[in-house]
Each structure stands twice: as structure tokens, then as C-alpha cells.
Image (tube, rainbow, N blue to C red; front, side, top):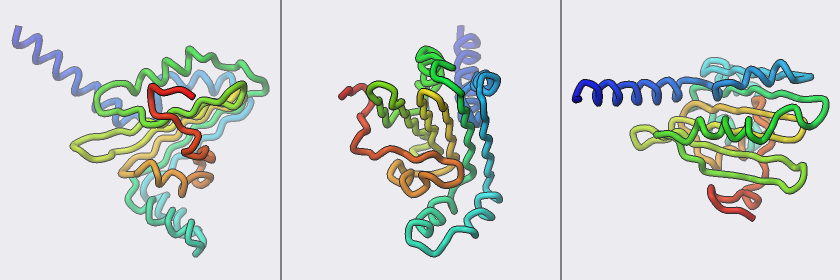
Length: 182
């Protein structure tokens, strides 16, 4: 019984480690086959450092430079479809479900009425520290996944919004804590 329990616990730890290292939810490649246009941005630490040299001296760009200095990478996959209905709500719910396990917290849900779209932000925590963040932005004709590896605070997203392939993040005033609805 102890060996079975030990093997089970080991498999849980390995699964959590694999999930933490995976850049995107399992199964998103199917959206590329349906998309009219696909955007793939992969910036590891060295590329982030290089890209930060092109930021201006404006205060917002300087804040972005400060934030990315501690990051390990920013990875974006965005799929544009020529008409709504290229993916289902059930497919997005299944992707969200992958981040309900240990080490992950669903910190923000933005739900739009009608065809505005939805945004979810998940934070990855380990050893009492922020290890990264995953954003899923689902609009009627566009589906975007952003994985930020490294320590980042939710309030820092505004500074990175619109840069490095990260889509514009809607105002926090529209955000609802997980489990709440408008």
C-alpha cells in the first residue's frame, strides 16, 4: 500500500512539474489548423533583454523594462478566425480546467456580454513565490494565449499590455474575482 501511495504522490509531483514547464495548455495546436492567421511569439530571457533595448525612455517603457528584467520568457500564441464559432465554449472551459490543479490560482475572470469575449488570468505559485502567469483571451474571432514565465504581479500586466505580443488587457474595473459574476 505504501508503494502504491508513494507512486501516486510521485506521479502527482511529476505532473505538476510538467504542467509548470509547459508553455501552453495541452491541445491548443488544433486551433492553428482552424485559424485564418496564426501568431507565434517566443521570447526567452536573452531575447527579452535584447528587445528591451528598443524601448523608449518614456516612463511606461521604463517600467516595462524593469518588469521584463526579472522574467524568464514571454510566449504568445494567437489565432484569428475568419468568422465566429471556430471554437466552442466547452473547448475553452476544458483549457481553463487544466489550470485548476496545485500551484495554480485563477485570479481574474472578465466575462463580456454578447460578443465582447472573455479573459482569464491564472497565476502559477511555487515555494511561496510567483513563478509565472497564463492569460487566455477568447474573443469571437480571435483566441490568444500568453504565458509569462518568472515573477510578475497582476498589476504589472498593464505595463506590458500591447507589447511583446501581449494583447491589450482590459481594465481591472471590469474584472471579477473568480466565482463572482456581474
